[in-house]
Amino acid sequence: MDLSITKAERLKPKPDDTQLGFGNIFTDHMFNMDYSPDKGWHDARIEPYAPLSLDPSTMFLHYGQGAFEGLKAYRTDSGKIQLFRPLDNFRRMNRSCRLLCMPKLDVEAALESLKQLLRLEKDWVPRASETSLYIRPTIFATDPFLGVRASHNYRYFVILSPVGAYYPEGFNPVKIMVTKDHVRAVRGGVGEAKTPGNYAASLLAGEKAHEDGYTQVLWLDGIEQKYIEEVGSMNIFFVINGEVVTPELTGSILPGITRDTVLALTTTWGMPVSERKISINDVFDAHQSGALQEIFGSGTAAVISPVGELRYDDRVVAVGDGKVGPVAQKLFKAIMDIQYGRSEDPKGWIVPVD
Ligand SMILES: *Cc1c(COP(=O)(O)O)cnc(C)c1O
Image (tube, rainbow, N blue to C red):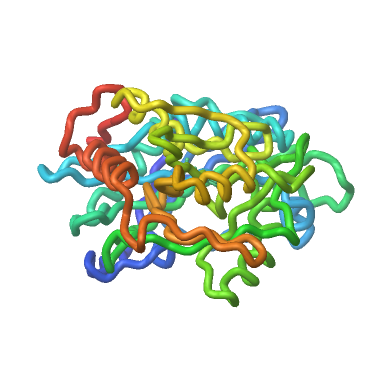
Protein backbone atom coordinates (compact mmCIF):
# COMPACT_ATOMS: atom_id res chain seq x y z
CA MET A 1 0.00 0.00 0.00
CA ASP A 2 1.20 3.50 -0.86
CA LEU A 3 1.18 5.61 2.25
CA SER A 4 2.31 9.23 2.29
CA ILE A 5 3.36 10.83 5.55
CA THR A 6 3.21 14.56 6.25
CA LYS A 7 4.55 15.39 9.67
CA ALA A 8 3.18 18.12 11.92
CA GLU A 9 5.45 21.17 12.11
CA ARG A 10 4.92 21.63 15.79
CA LEU A 11 4.12 18.83 18.23
CA LYS A 12 1.61 19.31 21.03
CA PRO A 13 2.76 19.10 24.65
CA LYS A 14 2.03 15.63 26.06
CA PRO A 15 -0.47 15.47 28.92
CA ASP A 16 0.30 14.16 32.41
CA ASP A 17 -0.27 10.37 32.22
CA THR A 18 -1.80 10.25 35.67
CA GLN A 19 -4.48 12.87 34.91
CA LEU A 20 -5.97 11.44 31.72
CA GLY A 21 -9.73 11.26 31.18
CA PHE A 22 -11.45 9.72 28.18
CA GLY A 23 -11.58 11.03 24.64
CA ASN A 24 -10.71 14.68 25.18
CA ILE A 25 -7.07 14.83 24.01
CA PHE A 26 -5.88 13.87 20.52
CA THR A 27 -2.43 13.14 19.19
CA ASP A 28 -0.40 15.08 16.59
CA HIS A 29 -1.31 13.00 13.54
CA MET A 30 -4.23 11.12 12.01
CA PHE A 31 -4.69 8.66 9.17
CA ASN A 32 -6.93 9.56 6.21
CA MET A 33 -8.00 7.64 3.12
CA ASP A 34 -10.71 8.23 0.52
CA TYR A 35 -13.00 6.00 -1.48
CA SER A 36 -14.48 6.68 -4.89
CA PRO A 37 -16.26 4.20 -7.16
CA ASP A 38 -13.58 4.48 -9.88
CA LYS A 39 -10.46 4.39 -7.70
CA GLY A 40 -11.67 2.32 -4.73
CA TRP A 41 -9.83 3.16 -1.51
CA HIS A 42 -6.97 5.51 -2.38
CA ASP A 43 -4.75 8.33 -1.20
CA ALA A 44 -3.79 6.69 2.10
CA ARG A 45 -2.00 9.33 4.12
CA ILE A 46 -0.82 10.20 7.59
CA GLU A 47 -1.26 13.92 8.20
CA PRO A 48 -1.30 16.38 11.06
CA TYR A 49 -4.46 15.98 13.17
CA ALA A 50 -6.81 18.69 11.89
CA PRO A 51 -10.48 19.65 11.59
CA LEU A 52 -12.32 18.27 8.55
CA SER A 53 -13.80 20.66 6.06
CA LEU A 54 -17.19 19.36 4.91
CA ASP A 55 -19.83 20.60 2.51
CA PRO A 56 -22.99 21.27 4.57
CA SER A 57 -24.82 18.82 2.30
CA THR A 58 -22.40 15.98 3.14
CA MET A 59 -24.65 12.91 3.25
CA PHE A 60 -23.32 11.59 6.54
CA LEU A 61 -24.49 14.74 8.35
CA HIS A 62 -28.06 14.19 7.15
CA TYR A 63 -28.59 10.45 7.01
CA GLY A 64 -25.99 9.05 9.37
CA GLN A 65 -24.36 6.64 6.95
CA GLY A 66 -21.21 5.83 8.90
CA ALA A 67 -19.52 3.32 11.17
CA PHE A 68 -16.73 3.36 13.72
CA GLU A 69 -14.57 1.10 15.85
CA GLY A 70 -12.92 1.36 19.24
CA LEU A 71 -9.74 -0.40 20.31
CA LYS A 72 -6.61 0.39 22.28
CA ALA A 73 -2.83 0.31 22.08
CA TYR A 74 -1.16 -0.80 25.30
CA ARG A 75 2.36 -0.17 26.60
CA THR A 76 3.96 -3.16 28.26
CA ASP A 77 6.25 -2.97 31.29
CA SER A 78 9.24 -3.26 28.98
CA GLY A 79 8.02 -0.24 27.00
CA LYS A 80 6.77 -2.10 23.90
CA ILE A 81 3.49 -1.18 22.26
CA GLN A 82 0.88 -3.77 21.37
CA LEU A 83 -2.69 -4.20 20.14
CA PHE A 84 -5.35 -6.66 21.30
CA ARG A 85 -7.30 -8.52 18.55
CA PRO A 86 -7.17 -5.56 16.12
CA LEU A 87 -8.14 -7.62 13.07
CA ASP A 88 -11.39 -8.49 14.84
CA ASN A 89 -12.15 -4.78 15.02
CA PHE A 90 -11.52 -4.29 11.30
CA ARG A 91 -13.58 -7.38 10.45
CA ARG A 92 -16.42 -6.05 12.58
CA MET A 93 -16.08 -2.68 10.87
CA ASN A 94 -16.56 -4.44 7.56
CA ARG A 95 -19.71 -6.10 8.85
CA SER A 96 -20.97 -2.67 9.94
CA CYS A 97 -20.08 -1.35 6.48
CA ARG A 98 -22.12 -4.07 4.83
CA LEU A 99 -25.21 -3.23 6.88
CA LEU A 100 -24.75 0.47 6.06
CA CYS A 101 -24.08 -0.09 2.31
CA MET A 102 -20.51 1.17 2.59
CA PRO A 103 -17.39 -0.22 0.91
CA LYS A 104 -15.23 -2.67 2.84
CA LEU A 105 -11.69 -2.08 3.98
CA ASP A 106 -8.81 -4.44 3.32
CA VAL A 107 -8.38 -5.53 6.95
CA GLU A 108 -4.68 -6.34 6.62
CA ALA A 109 -3.96 -2.97 4.99
CA ALA A 110 -6.04 -1.22 7.66
CA LEU A 111 -3.96 -2.91 10.36
CA GLU A 112 -0.70 -2.04 8.58
CA SER A 113 -1.65 1.65 8.30
CA LEU A 114 -2.71 1.69 11.94
CA LYS A 115 0.67 0.28 12.95
CA GLN A 116 2.43 2.97 10.90
CA LEU A 117 0.38 5.69 12.60
CA LEU A 118 1.13 4.19 16.02
CA ARG A 119 4.86 4.03 15.29
CA LEU A 120 4.82 7.73 14.48
CA GLU A 121 2.75 8.50 17.61
CA LYS A 122 4.44 6.01 19.96
CA ASP A 123 5.36 8.64 22.53
CA TRP A 124 1.62 9.27 22.97
CA VAL A 125 1.01 5.78 24.36
CA PRO A 126 0.85 6.57 28.08
CA ARG A 127 2.90 4.72 30.71
CA ALA A 128 0.91 5.13 33.92
CA SER A 129 -0.83 2.02 35.21
CA GLU A 130 -3.97 0.95 33.30
CA THR A 131 -3.72 3.82 30.82
CA SER A 132 -3.75 3.26 27.05
CA LEU A 133 -4.01 4.96 23.67
CA TYR A 134 -7.61 4.72 22.47
CA ILE A 135 -7.97 4.22 18.70
CA ARG A 136 -11.04 5.40 16.81
CA PRO A 137 -11.27 4.25 13.17
CA THR A 138 -14.26 5.85 11.40
CA ILE A 139 -15.88 5.64 7.95
CA PHE A 140 -18.50 8.07 6.72
CA ALA A 141 -20.43 9.06 3.58
CA THR A 142 -19.02 12.14 1.85
CA ASP A 143 -21.20 12.81 -1.22
CA PRO A 144 -22.56 16.37 -1.13
CA PHE A 145 -26.16 15.40 -1.91
CA LEU A 146 -29.56 15.54 -0.19
CA GLY A 147 -31.31 12.64 -1.90
CA VAL A 148 -31.68 9.50 0.19
CA ARG A 149 -29.49 6.75 -1.22
CA ALA A 150 -26.12 5.22 -0.38
CA SER A 151 -23.27 7.67 -0.95
CA HIS A 152 -20.79 6.97 -3.75
CA ASN A 153 -17.77 8.45 -1.94
CA TYR A 154 -16.43 7.86 1.56
CA ARG A 155 -13.71 8.95 3.96
CA TYR A 156 -11.93 6.61 6.36
CA PHE A 157 -9.91 8.13 9.17
CA VAL A 158 -8.21 7.04 12.37
CA ILE A 159 -7.65 9.30 15.35
CA LEU A 160 -5.85 8.49 18.60
CA SER A 161 -6.55 9.63 22.15
CA PRO A 162 -4.55 8.85 25.31
CA VAL A 163 -6.99 7.64 27.98
CA GLY A 164 -6.74 7.16 31.71
CA ALA A 165 -7.52 4.19 33.92
CA TYR A 166 -11.24 3.45 33.74
CA TYR A 167 -11.42 2.93 37.49
CA PRO A 168 -9.22 5.65 39.01
CA GLU A 169 -11.02 5.14 42.35
CA GLY A 170 -10.83 1.37 42.20
CA PHE A 171 -12.79 -1.43 40.61
CA ASN A 172 -16.30 -0.82 42.02
CA PRO A 173 -19.76 -2.07 41.04
CA VAL A 174 -22.08 0.26 39.10
CA LYS A 175 -25.87 0.64 39.12
CA ILE A 176 -27.80 0.09 35.93
CA MET A 177 -31.38 0.81 34.94
CA VAL A 178 -33.46 -1.49 32.74
CA THR A 179 -35.56 0.69 30.47
CA LYS A 180 -39.19 -0.10 29.61
CA ASP A 181 -39.83 3.08 27.69
CA HIS A 182 -37.18 2.84 24.99
CA VAL A 183 -35.53 0.24 22.78
CA ARG A 184 -32.08 0.49 21.26
CA ALA A 185 -32.43 -1.73 18.21
CA VAL A 186 -34.89 -4.09 16.59
CA ARG A 187 -34.72 -7.35 14.66
CA GLY A 188 -33.63 -6.67 11.10
CA GLY A 189 -32.23 -3.26 12.04
CA VAL A 190 -28.64 -2.12 12.52
CA GLY A 191 -28.21 -3.01 16.20
CA GLU A 192 -25.20 -5.20 15.49
CA ALA A 193 -23.39 -2.40 13.65
CA LYS A 194 -21.24 0.17 15.39
CA THR A 195 -23.06 2.98 13.65
CA PRO A 196 -23.68 6.49 15.01
CA GLY A 197 -27.50 6.32 14.91
CA ASN A 198 -27.58 3.53 17.52
CA TYR A 199 -25.84 5.84 19.98
CA ALA A 200 -28.02 8.84 19.15
CA ALA A 201 -31.05 6.62 19.79
CA SER A 202 -29.73 5.67 23.23
CA LEU A 203 -29.18 9.16 24.62
CA LEU A 204 -32.64 9.96 25.96
CA ALA A 205 -32.90 6.74 27.95
CA GLY A 206 -29.34 7.36 29.21
CA GLU A 207 -30.25 10.84 30.43
CA LYS A 208 -33.31 9.52 32.25
CA ALA A 209 -31.22 6.80 33.92
CA HIS A 210 -28.65 9.40 35.02
CA GLU A 211 -31.37 11.59 36.53
CA ASP A 212 -32.35 8.63 38.68
CA GLY A 213 -28.78 7.96 39.78
CA TYR A 214 -27.95 5.06 37.42
CA THR A 215 -24.79 5.03 35.31
CA GLN A 216 -26.05 3.02 32.33
CA VAL A 217 -29.11 1.60 30.64
CA LEU A 218 -29.72 -2.12 30.19
CA TRP A 219 -31.66 -2.67 26.97
CA LEU A 220 -34.34 -5.27 26.46
CA ASP A 221 -35.17 -6.68 23.03
CA GLY A 222 -37.12 -4.37 20.75
CA ILE A 223 -39.97 -6.77 20.03
CA GLU A 224 -41.23 -8.34 23.25
CA GLN A 225 -39.24 -6.03 25.55
CA LYS A 226 -38.59 -9.08 27.64
CA TYR A 227 -35.18 -10.49 26.73
CA ILE A 228 -31.95 -8.89 27.85
CA GLU A 229 -29.73 -7.49 25.11
CA GLU A 230 -26.85 -5.33 26.33
CA VAL A 231 -25.78 -2.24 28.28
CA GLY A 232 -24.97 1.18 26.72
CA SER A 233 -21.60 0.35 25.23
CA MET A 234 -21.04 -3.02 26.87
CA ASN A 235 -22.28 -6.56 26.58
CA ILE A 236 -23.75 -8.15 29.68
CA PHE A 237 -23.01 -11.33 31.62
CA PHE A 238 -24.70 -13.10 34.50
CA VAL A 239 -23.27 -15.80 36.74
CA ILE A 240 -26.16 -18.06 37.72
CA ASN A 241 -25.49 -21.18 39.76
CA GLY A 242 -21.87 -21.14 38.65
CA GLU A 243 -22.77 -20.84 34.97
CA VAL A 244 -21.62 -17.84 32.92
CA VAL A 245 -24.59 -16.67 30.83
CA THR A 246 -24.77 -13.96 28.17
CA PRO A 247 -27.53 -13.17 25.67
CA GLU A 248 -27.04 -14.91 22.33
CA LEU A 249 -26.28 -12.69 19.34
CA THR A 250 -29.60 -12.00 17.67
CA GLY A 251 -28.69 -9.30 15.16
CA SER A 252 -29.68 -6.45 17.45
CA ILE A 253 -26.77 -6.93 19.87
CA LEU A 254 -23.30 -5.54 19.22
CA PRO A 255 -20.91 -8.52 18.98
CA GLY A 256 -18.28 -7.31 21.44
CA ILE A 257 -14.70 -8.47 21.15
CA THR A 258 -14.41 -8.35 24.94
CA ARG A 259 -17.60 -10.48 25.07
CA ASP A 260 -15.92 -13.04 22.84
CA THR A 261 -12.79 -12.87 24.99
CA VAL A 262 -14.82 -13.51 28.16
CA LEU A 263 -16.50 -16.51 26.52
CA ALA A 264 -13.16 -17.91 25.35
CA LEU A 265 -11.42 -17.49 28.72
CA THR A 266 -14.23 -18.85 30.90
CA THR A 267 -14.53 -21.82 28.54
CA THR A 268 -10.76 -22.41 28.83
CA TRP A 269 -11.08 -22.28 32.61
CA GLY A 270 -13.61 -25.09 32.43
CA MET A 271 -16.58 -23.04 33.59
CA PRO A 272 -20.03 -23.83 32.24
CA VAL A 273 -20.77 -21.10 29.69
CA SER A 274 -23.89 -20.43 27.70
CA GLU A 275 -25.06 -17.96 25.07
CA ARG A 276 -28.82 -17.99 25.20
CA LYS A 277 -31.96 -15.95 25.50
CA ILE A 278 -32.32 -14.66 29.03
CA SER A 279 -35.32 -12.65 30.10
CA ILE A 280 -35.49 -9.99 32.75
CA ASN A 281 -37.84 -12.32 34.64
CA ASP A 282 -35.22 -15.09 34.57
CA VAL A 283 -32.85 -12.65 36.28
CA PHE A 284 -35.40 -11.78 38.97
CA ASP A 285 -36.20 -15.47 39.48
CA ALA A 286 -32.51 -16.35 39.78
CA HIS A 287 -32.08 -13.53 42.27
CA GLN A 288 -35.11 -14.66 44.30
CA SER A 289 -33.89 -18.26 44.51
CA GLY A 290 -30.38 -17.17 45.48
CA ALA A 291 -28.85 -18.54 42.26
CA LEU A 292 -27.77 -15.15 40.86
CA GLN A 293 -24.15 -14.68 41.88
CA GLU A 294 -22.80 -11.91 39.65
CA ILE A 295 -23.67 -9.44 36.92
CA PHE A 296 -20.98 -7.66 34.89
CA GLY A 297 -20.56 -5.81 31.63
CA SER A 298 -17.74 -6.27 29.07
CA GLY A 299 -16.27 -3.74 26.64
CA THR A 300 -13.00 -2.27 25.42
CA ALA A 301 -13.23 0.89 27.53
CA ALA A 302 -13.80 -0.68 30.95
CA VAL A 303 -12.78 -4.29 30.13
CA ILE A 304 -15.09 -5.63 32.86
CA SER A 305 -17.64 -3.53 34.69
CA PRO A 306 -19.19 -5.21 37.72
CA VAL A 307 -22.87 -4.41 38.29
CA GLY A 308 -24.01 -4.07 41.89
CA GLU A 309 -27.60 -3.05 41.29
CA LEU A 310 -30.12 -3.49 38.53
CA ARG A 311 -33.45 -1.72 38.57
CA TYR A 312 -36.53 -2.53 36.49
CA ASP A 313 -39.62 -0.46 37.24
CA ASP A 314 -39.94 -0.66 41.00
CA ARG A 315 -38.09 -3.94 41.30
CA VAL A 316 -34.45 -3.89 42.35
CA VAL A 317 -31.87 -6.64 42.19
CA ALA A 318 -28.85 -6.08 44.42
CA VAL A 319 -25.93 -8.41 43.79
CA GLY A 320 -22.66 -9.01 45.56
CA ASP A 321 -23.19 -6.78 48.60
CA GLY A 322 -21.40 -3.85 47.00
CA LYS A 323 -18.38 -6.04 46.29
CA VAL A 324 -16.89 -7.26 43.00
CA GLY A 325 -17.61 -10.94 42.33
CA PRO A 326 -14.81 -13.49 41.86
CA VAL A 327 -15.57 -14.19 38.17
CA ALA A 328 -15.57 -10.47 37.26
CA GLN A 329 -12.40 -9.98 39.28
CA LYS A 330 -10.60 -12.91 37.67
CA LEU A 331 -11.61 -11.88 34.15
CA PHE A 332 -10.61 -8.27 34.69
CA LYS A 333 -7.13 -9.29 35.79
CA ALA A 334 -6.69 -12.02 33.20
CA ILE A 335 -7.69 -9.82 30.25
CA MET A 336 -5.64 -6.83 31.40
CA ASP A 337 -2.61 -9.06 32.04
CA ILE A 338 -2.76 -10.27 28.43
CA GLN A 339 -3.36 -6.77 27.03
CA TYR A 340 -0.42 -5.28 28.97
CA GLY A 341 1.86 -8.21 28.22
CA ARG A 342 2.12 -9.35 31.84
CA SER A 343 0.93 -12.85 31.07
CA GLU A 344 1.11 -15.25 28.17
CA ASP A 345 -1.09 -14.86 25.14
CA PRO A 346 -2.22 -18.43 24.49
CA LYS A 347 -4.77 -17.49 21.82
CA GLY A 348 -2.63 -15.26 19.62
CA TRP A 349 -4.65 -12.16 20.48
CA ILE A 350 -1.67 -9.80 20.77
CA VAL A 351 -0.26 -7.93 17.77
CA PRO A 352 3.03 -6.13 18.44
CA VAL A 353 3.40 -2.66 16.92
CA ASP A 354 7.12 -1.99 17.30
C1 LIG B 1 -18.42 -1.33 21.26
C2 LIG B 1 -19.65 -1.83 21.92
C3 LIG B 1 -19.66 -2.95 22.77
C4 LIG B 1 -18.40 -3.64 23.22
O1 LIG B 1 -17.60 -4.12 22.21
P1 LIG B 1 -16.06 -4.42 22.46
O2 LIG B 1 -15.59 -4.91 21.16
O3 LIG B 1 -15.99 -5.42 23.53
O4 LIG B 1 -15.46 -3.12 22.87
C5 LIG B 1 -20.86 -3.40 23.25
N1 LIG B 1 -22.01 -2.79 22.95
C6 LIG B 1 -22.06 -1.69 22.16
C7 LIG B 1 -23.35 -1.06 21.84
C8 LIG B 1 -20.86 -1.18 21.64
O5 LIG B 1 -20.89 -0.09 20.89
